[in-house]
Amino acid sequence: MAHNVLNRYLFEDLSVRGELVQLDDAFQQIISSKEYPAPLKNLLGELLVSTTLLTATLKFEGSITMQLQGDGPVSLAVINGDNDQKVRGIARWEGKIESNATIHDMMGKGYLVITIEPKKGERYQGIVALEGNNLAEILEGYFANSEQLKTRLWIRTGEHEGKPQAAGMLIQVMPDGKGGEEDFEHLEQLTDTVKNDELFTLQANDLLYRLYNQEKVRLYQPQPVAFHCGCSREKSGAAIVTLGHAEVDNILDEIGSVSLHCDYCGTTYSFDQTQVAELFNQTNSGDNTLH
Ligand SMILES: [Zn+2]
Image (cartoon, rainbow, N blue to C red; front, side, top):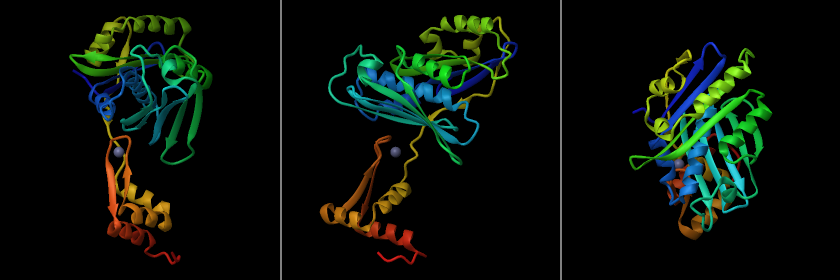
């Protein structure tokens, strides 16, 4: 079984490219950090699949964050992924979420923020209205408006043998302009026939053959996708220093230590008085400013 993997492929004669992502552990680890209601788990799964499909096209080192914000029971659902397909995510909600809740029931009046952040260079942010019945339709609208490249997405979440699964496919006309409309529609119809079980269980080769056996498809090297939180004790220490001496001393006086909690992975980083002093010393070495 091929899991936690991203595959890219190309219909060589049709100037259309494709992606297939199949996730179980990476998805499982993200939704296990809290007792999420089932529809919210699925929404995080859809966001995760979308983020992976989008980061597949990054041509530089960096990350993409897809963040849903709204005034509904779910105030925030966010997934962050980088060019190495390291993914993490979190959601916040309040109150009851019905088992059949849609994205609109959960988010209320909201929007999707897509942030593309290169390691070097300017970051780009796009704000997308929640127009569509589900995240795939919302993103198709985004592509139609921003990239002008015809794009279709299929995103499915569910379970296989008791294990949560999130998977998806994307097809997109190549920018060379050679892809014909009829060919694209034909590929859409073929991809529409994909069943959840096939998406969750078949190897890329088998799945692509099952869907497109009449077409010439070139399948590229797969890329593994893994849950990974970028947080560290070092980064937390740096964040504490940015709070400034006065603020940190107040906290130390009150509770004896300073702690930072990472929502993405649930790790807490604690620093006692001596460790805090070390943090400030390290930062100030070679620095003559008085504190
Ligand atoms: Zn973390």
